[in-house]
Length: 161
Image 1: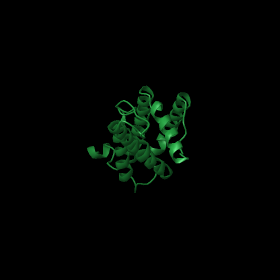
Image 2 (image 1 turned 120 degrees about the horizontal axis):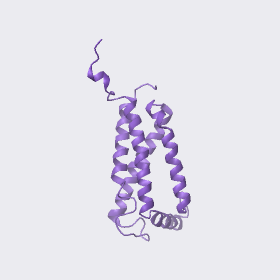
Image 3 (image 1 turned 90 degrees about the vertical axis):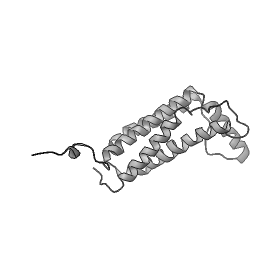
Image 4 (image 1 turned 30 degrees about the vertical axis):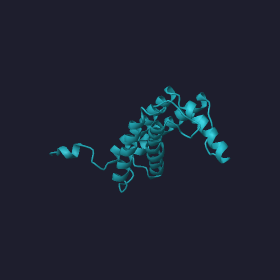
């Protein structure tokens, strides 16, 4: 029996690449959180939340201490990591979460850090030295989100394994 070389490689639209993109996404998020922690993200985030609260009377984002912020994000990334086997199976229930993570947590987040760097502020009263905290890992985050969207599209009609 002969086996062709193409049968040995994962198919272009296989759940294998979907699983790889899931792992890439949560790893990129972990790198990004590390970048934010090392570059003083909360010194920009918390004053921005307070300013938005003062301006609008309501703002849905809370302020954090460093410890609770890092613990919460670490726990979230750990949960995403534990869901990896389901991404390799193309679990239908995971796909909405995957889209959310790719678009909001990766692509829009990376764009936000880039715009913050360009502008040098978040809101008018919260200015910071450039680059914005979290900028260094933003390209990785952006690419991971884009790769995830491509794989989600390629696997949309595949069965769950």
